[in-house]
Every structure is written in structure tokens, then in C-alpha cells.
Image 1 (tube, rainbow, N blue to C red):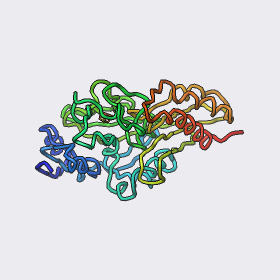
Image 2: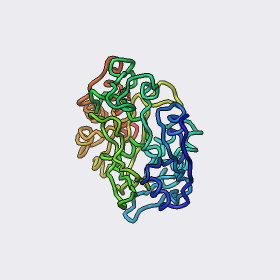
Image 3: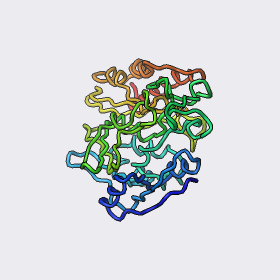
Length: 326
Ligand code: SF4
């Protein structure tokens, strides 16, 4: 492992000072330490931020939910407000990683995690994300688990997070604090598609810290849930997944928020599916017609063509689970 220095920030100012000088923030370390061991990441300076006061989950004035960046995944999943107000978030968290990892990893770290593309983690392989300009071994290699949406000629890796799919569906906001003050970034703009610069994955500026993720208030009653399809039932990333949030009043869908995981280079919001649902009455036919739109624009690779149909079926099934049918 490349030598590095380690310090523990006692307050936010100290952390930001270290971050401005190029220090890398570390909390649960469940991604960064792995990547350092594999020499994919070689930071000179680590700044431990686990002592900062970012571990609260609070209901906002408008009735939304603010989850501190250092809340552990397991804590967020078990929190009564998360479970009752946004089950889609707790379900996505519980279907992530392993229990041990969920006990260590934080919400901020989760949305900052890097891809699980095997070529990215193999320093002998060509990878534009790890080494810009070197090429993409996945394009003509084993790409069964790779993305079918949002890809570019430079990178076809999926975003690995489950809870990020729920955040995308719910149109959450990421709160950042940096040398220039506070900033709020809509989740849709926070995670970046690869384009020609797949090495840039988040809209985080030098020295900025994530302080919280805020989920907006939504009209009630609200039903929501997360479905994950994978090769085995635990400790595995999604082949496809669907986060569905529905507000139904007087038998009519008034609001629909839907996003997919395992298929996009970022969590993939599905506005065409949402538009098809709003104003309609729940029915088996509606779920099927809406889900057909989930794979619009998909560009399958040599080994992952099956994801197109699997995505539609995953979305249809989760619409039925959350919305029921007459
Ligand atoms: Fe690297 Fe992206 Fe290609 Fe994987 S898909 S090898 S992460 S450039």
C-alpha cells in the first residue's frame, strides 16, 4: 500500500482546512480502504471525519427528512422516521452490501462510492475511470453486469449504490460544505454520467464535505418500496432494481416517482414511466404499459442484452407491489 498520513478532524473547520490542502475524507472506509489496498487509490493524506456532528436524522420544517452524512447505513435503515415516511429508503439500505458493511458505511460515503467494475479494480486493465485515456476494457470484455443506459464510448460502468436509486426517485438534495460555504445540489446533478470524463463521478468540489442528504416532503398518503434483482440473495449488486413512490388519492395516481438501478451509469430516473402513471387509476394493464417505457434509449452491450427485458419486468413488478391492482 502506498504510504499516507492520517489525521482525525476534531471539528468541521479543521476538516475543511485539511480538505482544502488536498486531504481525502474518510469515514466508514468501506470503499476507500479496499481501493487503497488494491492500489487503485493512492491518497497522500487521509482526514478522518467520524468525529464531526453529522449523525442526526431530523424531520425538516416542511415535513421532509434530513439524514446526516455520517449516519451509518444500518442506523438509517432502522430509524423509525425513515421506515414510516420513506420505506423505499430503508428497503434499499437493507438490500445493500452485508450487515457488517452496513454497520460501518455511512450515507455520505455510500453516495461517494466508486464503481464495482472489475476492470476498474484491476490495475493491470485499461480503464478510463482509473487512468483517463487508457481505454475501457469492459467495452469488448466481460460486460454482463455493466450499464445499458447513460453509457459513453469512454465508460459503461454502473453506479453500484441502492439507496442512491431511492434518493434519485425521491428527488433528494445533497448538502455540501466547502471552503466557499454551503451548497445544495439536486441529486439528479450530483452523480455524473461518464461522457468523456468518467474519472469525475460526483459534482463535489475540492475540499467539499457532504453534510446531509435531504428528502423533500411529499403529499400523503404515500406508498413506496424498493425491489432488487441480483444473482444471489445477499451481498451482491443489482442486475436491475426499481424504486417506486406513489401518491394515490380518490383512486387516482396523483404523483409517481420511479428510478432504476443496476442499469445506468448513474441511478436512472424514469420520467416517461412517471408521466404514463400520473392521472391514471392503478391497474395491471397500467403497470405493464408504463414499464415498457423503462428501457427507452437503452444501448445493450454484447453480454447484457438481457437487462432490457429484465428492467421492464422489474419495474412492472415493483409498480404492482407498491400500487396494487384492481
Ligand atoms: Fe473502467 Fe468504466 Fe471501462 Fe469499467 S466500464 S473498465 S470503470 S472505463
